[in-house]
Picture 1 (cartoon, helix red, strand yellow):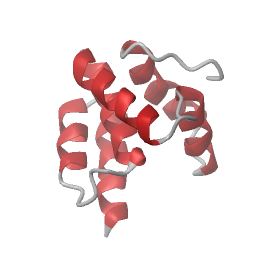
Picture 2 (picture 1 turned 180 degrees about the vertical axis):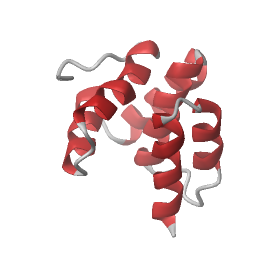
Picture 3 (picture 1 turned 135 degrees about the vertical axis):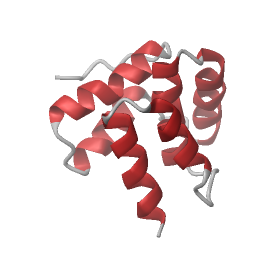
Picture 4 (picture 1 turned 120 degrees about the horizontal axis):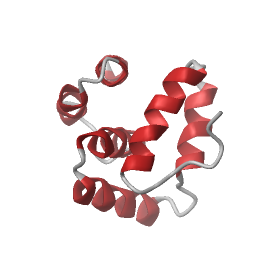
Length: 104
């Protein structure tokens, strides 16, 4: 069932409905997962809600010191997202102030 929330998040993000992308993550029963936090960061970056994104970024770093935009990108590549989607997704991180050095 958890995959449902992820699938909808990525769908809404891909279609530039960033508010719905945030809302669906908010319905996930496990808000403590780093994966859910990075979903918020990308969408908040696109929405210009930089303070929200920064707070979540700090939380990720506290819980996972190796966390970075590049780390997220590598995780998403493992899931075989197409490169154009990945570039769009990482754009949200860049807008939040956390650019990725390895976007193609």
